[in-house]
Amino acid sequence: MIALTLAEIAELTSGELTPAADPAAQVTGFVEFDSRRITPGGLFVALPGERVDGHSFAAAAIEKGAVAVLAARPLDEPAVIVPAASDSDADVADAVVTAMSAVAAAVAKRLVAEGELRIVGVTGSAGKTSTKDLMAAVFGTQGPTIAPPGSFNNEIGHPYTVLRCDRHTEYLVAEMSARGIGHIAHLATIAPPQVGVVLNVGSAHIGEFGSRENIARAKGELVEALLAAADGGVAVLNADDPFVAAMAQRTEAKVVTYSTATPPTSGASYYASDIELDDVARATFVLHHPHGEPVRVRLQVFGAHQVSNATATAAAAIESGLAPTQVAEALSHHRAASAHRMDVSSRADGTTIINDSYNANPESMRAAVAALAYTASAKAGARAIAVLGEMNELGDDGIDAHTCLGEELARFNVTHLVTVGGGELNRATVRAAQSGGVKTVAAADVDAAVAEVEKVLHTRPEADAHDGDVVLVKASNSAGLWRVAEALADTREGRTNA
Image 1 (tube, rainbow, N blue to C red):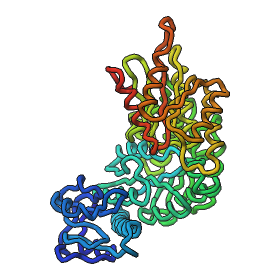
Image 2 (cartoon, helix red, strand yellow):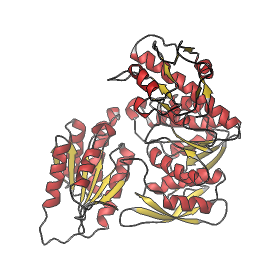
Image 3 (tube, rainbow, N blue to C red):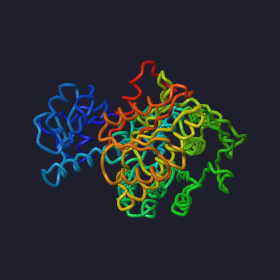
Image 4 (tube, helix red, strand yellow):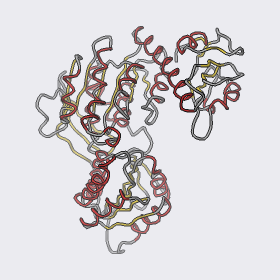
């Protein structure tokens, strides 16, 4: 982050300095809420958690070189103590996060005002992290770029990411999630975007929002926030999604649209044509744009759905002044950056493992199952095996969504389904898949799931020639199915990237 004195931080946060704190001391390093990651010159943010309280690690953070601690409970160490409504963990956490956000907002405002920083926000029900990674790769070819690690896209991860920016940073790619109305609007006050990209409105978190209309209302807060941008802003909207396309009416910013439909949705400013997939579902396509001749893109990330993510990325980048040829080249060289997201690997026995275990919702499940089916169809004699856990936060729609998932598995000719964990949602998937002819087995935990998949992989007539089966591992992150994918990938020597 840019250098700030403790006196400046105290003023920004309405906090008070402890006697041990030097008002003139400057924070010049990173802001961290894990004391093990503190580097000299940093600021330690003391957050209470389910198991430990960050305030207990204040001394350790100072010993590692932190200039001070941002806290809401009394400390003897150099610290900025901010007021909390009570001493409960919830109120203390809220106070510290609010304070961190205030510092982040000040940093972003200063860098934008100085003309150093362009902020690109991205939201959607599915594909945010993959698109954020694509954007980071593309904008990174133009200048120093900051993007959140993994899915740091909430009220904690967002200001944390903003505070990675300094006077050398030219682009901030901000992934913005919402658990309710007003969340994205709040994130946008911390780092007002000049470019806002809305990918889709699906049914992820519908249990919290109640309807897709409410999800659309929340996602559209991003394009409404563009009014705060110095240059009026640019809204990049998915023309193929009616909920997203309708957001054009909610902003006075410039609106450009993109499409990957065949033929492209009428009026789309950016669109993909001639889409082809290789044997592991990596897409090649022609990108059409309003600034000259079309350019060809050959993606290194997996799944047909990545074409839409890439087209959205291209629109945001070209509208920010990058050359179409530069954008196409950067897209063509990018490989998956976030862990457990369409991470494809091959074992020495020919088995392909698709590890997409970080998150799951009906839209991303559909895309992953399609990628599984396509990859299996491209390999002679390959079987498509799905290892799935439950999709969370779907509310009353959960049973129907999992029933549709089971039907989708049958429609895409998935041969085997291994569900992990008990629960009525998994049972709904199994019932629908079995009705469509999919062979199913329920595994109680990760170890049982690995054993069941290995059993399937080994139960094939020796005379049955094949190029190796394809295994998809996917569930909501809380299920921890990345452990299944990693165990399967490490079961045979000679693991290589596909």
